[in-house]
Image (cartoon, rainbow, N blue to C red):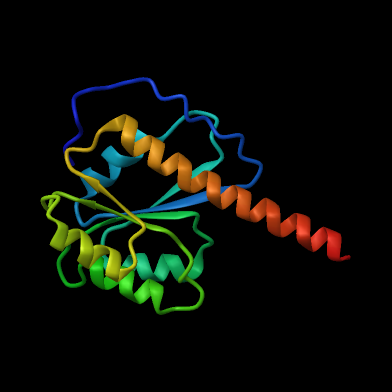
Length: 158
């Protein structure tokens, strides 16, 4: 995975009261390691799970409670668009946000296909560290807020 050479300190520390799991999906193990090292911050309550194929990603998504999936588009056997469509059509996984990570050009036709498949956003390679962290932090924040809201409303209904 190519990372943008520009590195900036990112103040995206989230006070996580809930354990958060983020699924990283890419058929190239070195890309998974690079992405995790870009996102990892000491003391975060975030676990990064890895999948090397679309099929493996689906199995993990059905088994785990995920805050977010970062999904490579170009994979053999089952591409990212197919994985996202399957996730959207399955009740247990339909609400997990999917960000496509791709080296495909930013042509609108590719983006439209991705959004139609169920993506909520795109990250284009080479990844810009600040933008990547900011997007991931935003979706994790939404996840934590949603969990807090559910717990609060459940508590009030008692």
